[in-house]
Length: 488
Image 1 (cartoon, rainbow, N blue to C red):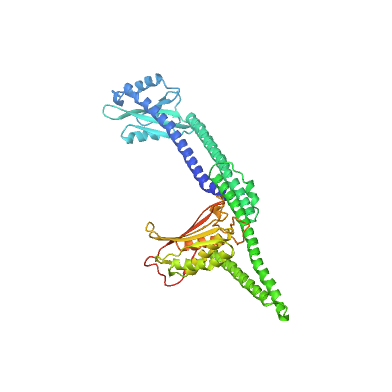
Image 2 (image 1 turned 90 degrees about the vertical axis):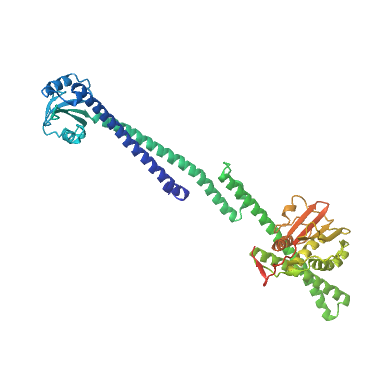
C-alpha cells in the first residue's frame, strides 16, 4: 500500500504532471488536425482561384460559354488524382463531374447555398457523404455580366487519407505522452525511494538509539553528500553525543553516590562510636573529634545536596534570583576569609590583597554569587597540591569601566586542551582522581549567565588554571520589585 511521501508525491506532483502532459497531448492532436484541415482548405481554395483564368473575374461572358468552358476546364484539370470537380447549374444541380459519375440527388450540398448568401461567392463544407465517406469541399459561384448566377464549380476532396494520417500521428503523440508519463513515474519513484528508504532506515536507527542502543548509529549508510547525508551525519553525531552524555551521566551518578556515601559512612561510624559514651567508655577528646567529623561531613553532605538541587532547578527552569545592589568586593572578601583556614590546613598559599578602592555596586543575588565564589575557590584549592599557590584578585580599571573582574589562579595540575571546552558542561569531569560531583562548574556558569556575566577559563597541563569572572556594574533602573524567576 502506497503511503507517506510517495502517496503525497503521487497525489500532488504526479497528478499535476499528468494533467500537464494530457493538456499537451490534446493540444498537439487538435493542432495537428487543424493543420491538416487548413492545408486541404488551402489546396481547395488555390484550385478554385484558378477559375479566374477560365472565367475572368469569375464571370462567364456571355453566359452561354459557361457550359463549354467548364467542360474544357474539367477535361484539362491536372489535379484529378487529389480532388474531384463538379459543375453545378444555376439551381445547384450537378450536371458534370471530373469522375464521369453524377452524385445522388439526395446528396446535400449546403456549401452552394452558403456561397450564394456569403457575399464572397464561395463557401466550404466539411462532413460525411451519403456513402459515409468523410469529405471536404469548396464551391465557387460563376456569374454573368449582370451579376446573375449562371452556375458553380465544386471542388471536393476525400478526408479519409487525411483522417488516417491524423489518427497515425495522434497515436504517436499519445504513445510519446505515455512514454513521458512512464519515465516521469519511474524516475519520480526512484527519486522518492532514494529519499524514503534512507529516512525509513534513519527512523529505525533513531528508534534503536532512543531505546539506548547507541551502536546502531554505526550502521547508518552515507551514500550522498546532500541533505540526507547531512541528516545521517547529524544523527550519527547525535548518537555519539548521547552516548557520551549517557556515559557522563552514569559516571555522574556513580560519583554522586560515592560523594554521598563517604560523609554518610563517616557520620554513621562516628555516631555508632559515640553511642558507647552512655556506658562511659569514650573519652572527651574522642567525643569532640567525632562530633567535629559529624558536623564537617554533615556540612559536606548538605553542600552536595544543595548543589544537586540547584542543578535540578536550572534544568527545569525554576532557578529563582533575588536581586539587589550588592558590594561584590565585600562578598568575595568574606568567601576568601572562609577558606583561609582550609588553605593553611592543606599547606596551600592563598594569596589575596584587600583593596581600599570603593567599587561600583553589582546587581545580583548575593547568595548565588557567593556560591559561585565558593565553587571557583574550592576547585582551585582542590586541584592545587600541597605547597602550591592560589592567587585571587579583584580588578576594576578605567579601560573597562562597565565591568568588574575577579580572577582566581592556581598552580595545580591544569586542564588539557581537549577537556577545556567541555569542563563547563553538565556531568563532565576532566580529572577523575579528585572528588566532586562534576556539576559545580556547570551550575556556576549558569548563575553567571543569569547575571549577564561570564565565566572564562584558561588552563594548561602542568601550568595551572585561571578562572575569570566578569560582572556588569549596576545601572540605574535595574531594580526588581520581586524575586526574578529565570526560565532556562
